[in-house]
Length: 323
Image (tube, rainbow, N blue to C red; front, side, top):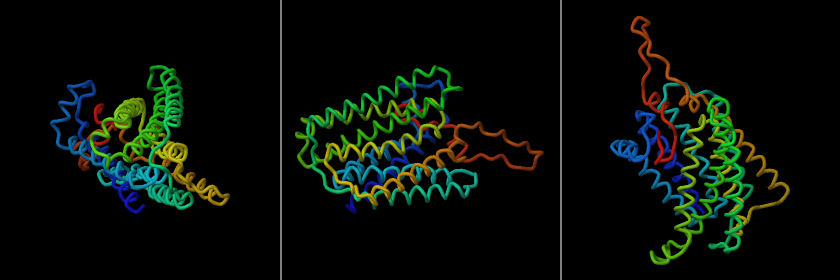
């Protein structure tokens, strides 16, 4: 279990590093650049390539963590990604970190620890039954489809409905990521069987398909509105869906006593509150606000330009859709 926890923390750190590197790499890319032309331009930038490397390393750490630990244990820890992104943006930026931001970060960490301590996820089988996979897959696809209909039925204007659309797509992406984590759990149980067994079974192909769909959903969510709208869905519904799938598919055990459930609810409430505050932090929302004009020499104040000024102009899209 200790290995699973350490690897999950490492995965969340790598994913956060990947997001920040991709933002920095895409910050000076023209908004009308897309498709293969965009990939060619980004591939010339070492910082963007470093982000792709961190993403791959984070995936490897997540697979290893799920190999050693329960899905209901590993996936909630990955919610620490938001804290690491927040810390990166605070370190790169010139803005002062407010007290409420630190309190929210501390509350989120405490809530996550309380939830895991009260739930004490354990046990479970390495493989889930086929009928259970079909039921889980169809249920996830159905909920995501309803979300897509709701999101794209809001109209094409980004001004009035952009935030609402981003929030709905962010929630759908979180559900997809939770299902992807369950597929990774199934896939990780076959790592010791050799390449022949891996490529002759369904998890590796399901992982490619669901992973690509999740990246596409995340890209649309982040392009539809501010990060503050989509990030709560990413951070909250991903571990929640994964934990429920861990219990349903793999028979993982979570304490369900009265006091345990009350503590788990309190922990989740702290996590939700922390995510909501951090997602609306000026450090996060600043990436969608125009950069102020450089003061003139007569004003006596030097123009503020640093890493965060480039970071603030980049979208946190997936690695194949940075704009």
